[in-house]
Structure formats: structure tokens, C-alpha cells
Image (cartoon, rainbow, N blue to C red; front, side, top):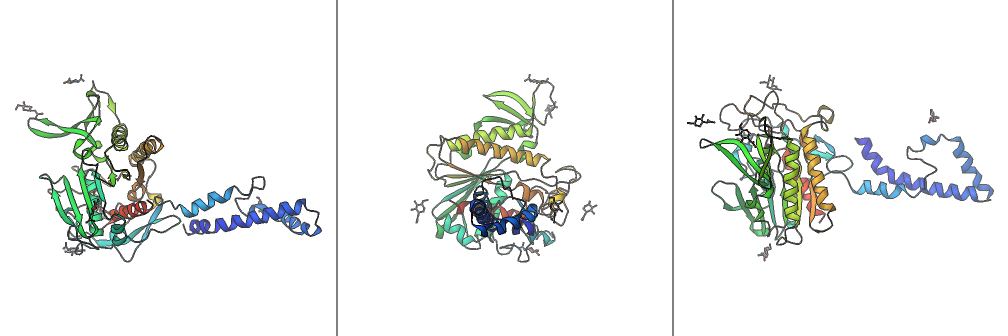
Length: 415
Ligand SMILES: *[C@@H]1O[C@H](CO)[C@@H](O)[C@H](O)[C@H]1NC(C)=O
Ligand SMILES: *[C@@H]1O[C@H](CO)[C@@H](O)[C@H](O)[C@H]1NC(C)=O
Ligand SMILES: *[C@@H]1O[C@H](CO)[C@@H](O)[C@H](O)[C@H]1NC(C)=O
Ligand SMILES: *[C@@H]1O[C@H](CO)[C@@H](O)[C@H](O)[C@H]1NC(C)=O
Ligand SMILES: *[C@@H]1O[C@H](CO)[C@@H](O)[C@H](O)[C@H]1NC(C)=O
Ligand SMILES: *[C@@H]1O[C@H](CO)[C@@H](O)[C@H](O)[C@H]1NC(C)=O
């Protein structure tokens, strides 16, 4: 890793050296000046491969430079590793008064080792989250998290981070606590969360009056509960995926087209990825063609957040009691469902940004790889659970999910 950083810093200098050297070489080759033969002879004795792996004498010498500079400036925030952070989190379960009890892992006895890590992108550092800077950027703006309980988890984390600079006031909460609005009055900043399991319209199938945990999902019908509320927003952070892992029925044009995670002889079986692809397409299209929306609306797609159940799942004894982040080599990053869903989200986002018709901004908050390594950051058994159920899906607060707001701040700064 250190070596990569070194290369990134050194590469441009070295390329400059090569360019000057090449110009000198060309000059000396075609010059009749007798002095010019010195360096040329020296070069022919030298092993060229030892000069630089990027030494291609046949290539035009000026080509590599812009690329090298780009690498230097555009650090890839999403590739990196978790390194020790002795300072821990910017907040604690004492200093964040809005910290929900379900995420207060410390209170339920979880060893706090998982707090002392920070995400280190290859080739650069993320500055420690500064709530004052964040609030200065979003002054007079409205930001909404749209999605399921992981979207809520992110909002709760951001609330804790921001509350270190100003105490938020909860100004709205619907009866089911699916929609909430917080104000930061001295920054005139509004933070909202809007609940939607699927982004599109879906209803639970009832069996004899009780919920069956299976849903009818209309892939091409936007969920109006959130969609009708976006016209005043400046920022949207949109996510979804986890609810597609149950048995669900899919509709297009009002017609049942098949199901996911099902085994019903007469129904076409679709993959989770197919359903996720379609709902992101529907949601992003809706946002991009929203005429009442603000001109400066920025939409960020937060990529898939993986769970870490081992030896079972929610209700089959699954647990997650590891005490360290995994090393990149210990995770099958590219082989699993997480990466596939992330890829689909990237593709659908790409479709929007390539679509020249709209000038709304779309960005990505790519958290999947970083979170795949954080087996240690879930509540597990350290939460007020009914029965013996472990939560290996949501993230403790403070905890690794706080990093999502570092990436968010970085993304907002660029606008
Ligand atoms: C020169 O390069 C060749 C192959 O590229 C390598 O086998 C050889 O060891 C190198 N010699 C020196 C002195 O570096
Ligand atoms: C905060 O977490 C610590 C353990 O890290 C725990 O002892 C304490 O009770 C918690 N405080 C609150 C207010 O939840
Ligand atoms: C707060 O921001 C809104 C725009 O979102 C603006 O219309 C309003 O005037 C601002 N209020 C104050 C007190 O600055
Ligand atoms: C629904 O109730 C009926 C009558 O009480 C019963 O026969 C049937 O098995 C129930 N169906 C399910 C899926 O529980
Ligand atoms: C599939 O079969 C079930 C049970 O046999 C039936 O209730 C359902 O209507 C069938 N669905 C379709 C689309 O034919
Ligand atoms: C995790 O839990 C399992 C099952 O209870 C146990 O066998 C294992 O030793 C635990 N590992 C750690 C690191 O605590």
C-alpha cells in the first residue's frame, strides 16, 4: 500500500524527467553537436527496463502525463483498506443524544474495538468528518435519505455526526415513524428520511389477515409516498436492495410477470438482480425527468450494504461475532451477490448520466467494498432483541457506517 502511494506521488516527477530526457535524446540524436553523443551512449549501455516500467521509447512522450496527473488528483475513495484510528469516532453514545437504542451497541456490552478504525483510500486520505464544514455546505438546503432501514441507519449516523456542531430538532414524524424531518435551525438545514422498501410501489400479501412477508412489487410504478415529496429537495441519497431477498411477486404494466426467491411451478423465476435493476431504473428515471424538481438537485446512489450472518440468517441462528475487520484477501469481494448488486446500481446510474436529455446531477456513494470487510461492525447480539436474534445487517453507532458521511461530504464538496 505504502508503495502504491509512493508510486502515485513519484510517477508525475518521473514522467517529467523522462519527457525532458526524451526531448534531449531526440535533440541529441538529430543534432550534429558532438557533445550529444555522451548521453546516448550511456543510455545504450543501461538496462532500459530498470529506468521505469513505463518506458516505451516508441510511444509519443507526452501521452502519459495527463493520465498520471489525473491519478494524482482523482483519488479513488472507494478502493482502500481499514487502518487503526486511535482517536476513535468523532462522537460517542453520550455525546449523540439522538442515537437510537437499537444501534447503541456499547450500551449492550459490545467490545468497542470496532470503533477504532478509519477508511484509508489507496493514494490519499479522507479528512476527519467536520460537522461545521458539512453544515456550511448545506446551509439553506434540504437533504433526504430515501430507502429502507439502512438509509435510516445512515441518517442516524449523520445526525450524530452533525449534532456535535448543532443539536437537531425533530420537527416531523409520521404515526408509523417511517418519515421523519429534522431541522438545524442556525444553519437553516433540513434533513429528512423517507421510508420505502422497494423504491417502487409494493404491498405486502396478507394471508388470513396477517402479513405474509411476501410482497407484490410493481417494477414500473414509482412509490408516490416519497416521489411526491422531492420537489423541494437539493440532495437525495437513494438506496434499496435488502428487501428483495424475500419471496416477492413482480409486476410490469399491472401484470404479474413472475417472482423472486420462489418456487411456484407456473411462475417465471427472476433473480434479485433483475428486480433491483428494474426498480433503480424506474426511480432514477423518475428523478431525472422530474420537472418540478430543483435545477441544482444532486442525487447520490448509495451502493449495496452487505450483511454478515454466519452459520444461518436472521431467524435461523445466524451470528456475527468477529472482532476485527477482514483483510481484503479474506473477503470474496467480486464473487458474491453484493458485488453483483453494486454493479447493477453502477450500470443504472451510468444509464442516467449518459442520457444527455437531463442535466440533473447523479453521483455514487460506493460503500460496498469497504463494508464487505466490516464483519465486526454490526450489533450482532448486542442489541435489545426479542428472542435470540442477532442483527448482522445494520451498523452500530458510532461505527463503520459513519464513513458513509465522509464520502458524502467529499461528494458534496465537489459541487
Ligand atoms: C536487464 O533486463 C533483463 C530483462 O529485461 C534482465 O533479465 C536483466 O537481469 C537486467 N539486467 C540488469 C543489470 O538489471
Ligand atoms: C455508552 O457505551 C458505554 C460502553 O462503551 C456504556 O458503558 C454506556 O452505558 C453507554 N452509555 C449510554 C448512555 O448508552
Ligand atoms: C432557508 O433556506 C430557504 C431555502 O431552502 C430560504 O428560502 C429561506 O429564506 C432560508 N431562511 C433563512 C432564515 O435564511
Ligand atoms: C386461513 O384460514 C383458513 C380458515 O381459517 C384455513 O383453512 C387456512 O389454512 C388458513 N391459511 C393459511 C395460509 O394459514
Ligand atoms: C399458479 O398456480 C396457483 C396454484 O395452483 C394458482 O393459484 C395461480 O393462480 C397460478 N398463477 C398463474 C399466474 O397462473
Ligand atoms: C462466535 O460464536 C460462536 C457460536 O456461539 C462461537 O463458537 C465462537 O467461538 C465465537 N467466536 C468468537 C470470536 O467469539
